[in-house]
Image 1 (tube, helix red, strand yellow):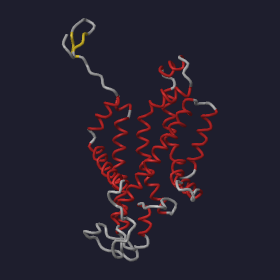
Image 2 (cartoon, helix red, strand yellow; image 1 turned 90 degrees about the horizontal axis):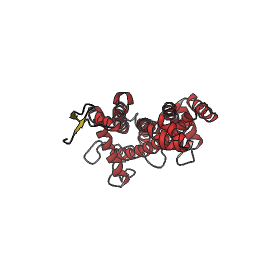
Image 3 (cartoon, one colour; image 1 turned 90 degrees about the vertical axis):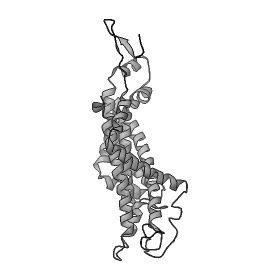
Image 4 (cartoon, helix red, strand yellow; image 1 turned 180 degrees about the vertical axis):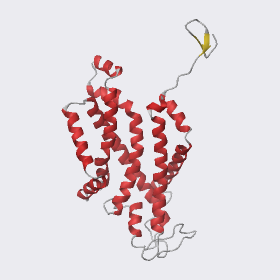
Length: 299
């Protein structure tokens, strides 16, 4: 029998069908999504800018006075200068690195915290552990989102990572609810029952068998949390509760409020356009990823 052939029940040779995993199907579907690919490309360019800032390849003079007050757009200052002569373009590039640092740290920790609590709550649904987790989610969600974040950031104002703690403490509930619902469906399946029959402990079942099957939810939630963290960082920095030892788009917009009456809008326009580009591109990428990883559509 030749390669690539198989025999059916009557012994007749037929072409063998190649089975593909759900992850391969999802990847192929994502590769056909033009909007998602465009979004991923733009995000990759922003990430390259952030990496260059982290390694000191560019934007090293973001805090230096390199020109005159409110210098116009020129070959030396692509976005002009601010009220004290600092280059707005370099400050915008440096703020891109800040956005990625905040977004990545918050998104990863939110997914870890929300995934663990959601999986534990779902696996032990109906128990006192589940009741405590659900009650905590309800309390956190009952307070308006930005009010909760601002309150926690203000209470921890002297802590260098107050903004990160505030966002993580608020964002995890959405991930937790999605994971909990998925785990409630998974815990009654055969592979979980088989693990129980073999004497595997509950913690091992959750970590080794149940939680990995929620990876598609965690990936999508990570992309959405990344965008939410960037927007929240801009708002907190604008209010003076965010970035303090550095530069961010929120601080640039806050500085621009002092320049409006003088008719200078370069700070506002630069920060807004850079933030809009990253957030919009990441939303396109997240939407395409969510469509590709949707179990109903992939199947």
